[in-house]
Image (tube, rainbow, N blue to C red):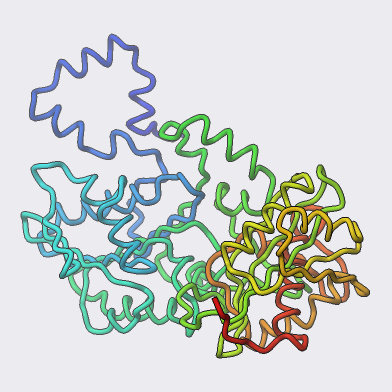
Amino acid sequence: MSTPLSRPGVWARLTPAEREAFVHSLTQEELDAFMVDFRNYAHEGQLPSDNGWFLWLIMAGRGFGKTRAGAEWVRFTAEKLPDARIALVAANLGEGRAVMVEGESGILACCPAGNRPDFEPSLRRLTWPNGAQATLYSAAEPESLRGPQHSHAWCDEIAKWPGSNERAARAWDNLMMGLRLGEDPRIMATTTPRAVPLMRRLLDPEQTQGLELTRGTTRDNAANLPAKFLAAMDAHYGETALGRQELEGELLQDIEGALWSRSLLERCRDDAFGDPPLRVVIGVDPPASSGGDECGIVVCGLGASGIGQVLADCSVAKASPERWARAVAEAASAWNADRVVAEANQGGQMVGSVLRAADFALPLTLVHASRGKVARAEPIAALYESGKVRHAGLFAALEDQLCGLMTGGGYEGPGRSPDRADALVWALSELMLGKRGQPRVQVI
């Protein structure tokens, strides 16, 4: 039996004359309803099934239309159920408001003018004309979900929820315990996949009952995306680990025997780490040639707590010596770096000359590697394991390389060489393993 066509599929098969005849056959009221009915425009992955699910998880690439699907599901629920009390949970309140509520594909943009909810930012609350309500919450504040009761919930980008101190899991648990209003409570979650503990838990059939999983790629929504955007994504990220995750919606698994795991990196991620760096070092792993590997440029800091911080990845690819040296100098200026540590094995004194040409005053130290990349990385991986390093954000390309460094030697990550990872190792070694590892107050 063939699968029934979606409404957009039926519309696409009509001739221009048939479309015009259909439109003219509608009354004005029917035409207005047709124009705001999402089912007339959605692709298959954006619409819920009738399978009686409890959790609908859309795990798909960027541009798939996850936000629009979530906003339209909330709108449909609110319009159908006047007693609905819906939780809107984001990684933080700023993203929740900017994306889920006021974004181009958010709730306010999806609702027709005659039935748009009133948004009260001070109360973080949306109220529809029929009485249905939705309230914003931050997954960074799990305790805010302890107590409130809901009938439905939309959780956006759950793989981005803060993992430190198990905040993501605690936020989810508190939400679930309060999902007890109405006769048919349901939860929808939308995310680009990352192998974080909460994602693994939700995908485990032994831990999650009533799961409806929708997978998808960026190209599934090609009809609503610029062709130039799709071409650029293919050119830059096609066949890369980052592309597989961010565009293809693939949940990347850990490589057995790697020094770093993705779950370890998620435990170390904290973009709100309140310890200003007192010393900043930039690690540089220069490329062997202008047309070959990347130039790894990673900014790290150390604060009064003694916790190392990965602050930025400024690496550049296929750059001439002048260009990558300029990128190093710009990073040093932007971050007011105390030291630039550059490996000189490949280029010898040429590395120093090129960097000095970009900025004569650069606080430069040239280092020569006596051990392989993996051997140098092992003590840094141990610092991660002991909780002594934090990532101040998501550095996908860098983290892919870290997860490809193998215990005992070897590299199984993207690209020919882990240049970004090596730059990180040089910077953190300078900050935390050498005599210069003690933070000091900068005089500016």
